[in-house]
Length: 115
Image (tube, rainbow, N blue to C red; front, side, top):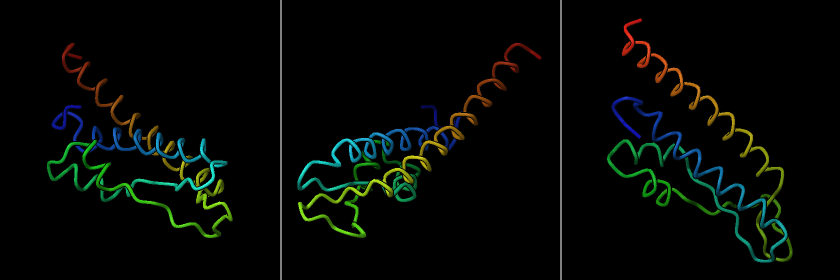
């Protein structure tokens, strides 16, 4: 995404999308013995992307294993309540960021049309 046109929001949208994918993977593997839930430290990833790393590299570097509140006997660390909250927060942030970008595109479009 164009970092000058969208500022921090282009990277934020990419990182939130990657985080949603990771959380979705956690939820899909909730019944897999030994599966270790992962998440992206969004603040660290965003900071790294603003310091010149690509969004993909920043997300990879900021991916962490979740520490479960109550570990399961089969070694799976997915806790559905935690995943659902993280998914809802990230989806809300994604929609807000997308709304900002959409507004920015509309503003540029109006300016190009001379409105």
